[in-house]
Image 1 (cartoon, rainbow, N blue to C red):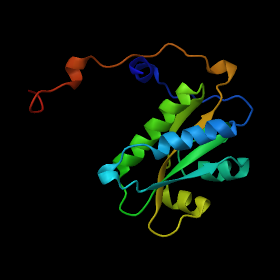
Image 2 (image 1 turned 90 degrees about the horizontal axis):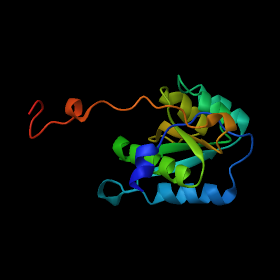
Image 3 (image 1 turned 180 degrees about the horizontal axis):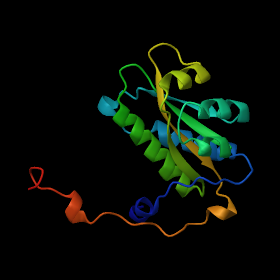
Image 4 (image 1 turned 60 degrees about the vertical axis):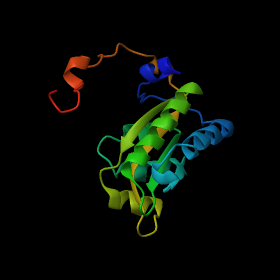
Length: 163
């Protein structure tokens, strides 16, 4: 599992076939079982697999080509009193589950909350700022050389910043 975390990459090219219902169920279960602050689970999920709806949703963000390309987008709805941190945890669980199932995934930021809310028909008090595009990887989506990470010395501090 540790190596799966280190190898996780956002992939933006998908095969032209729907995600199997079994895999969709497994992704939703992985999302549902994500830990949350005080175990409130103040989230819900909208499965978007209609191409016209995906096109409309893509207008809510600036870098949303994966939403148009993927056979499935999982919109992550922050329910009232929900925490954005918890939504990020859900996205990561979906991506890790997708990789374990042989699926490609890409996190998406929806920069225009009001557009996402309108497209998704969200009730008052709900917000969709993030989504995850999911599909089987296209043959062209083979892993490519990765740029690596900053040295730990640039990232790690002890007790205080700069310490």
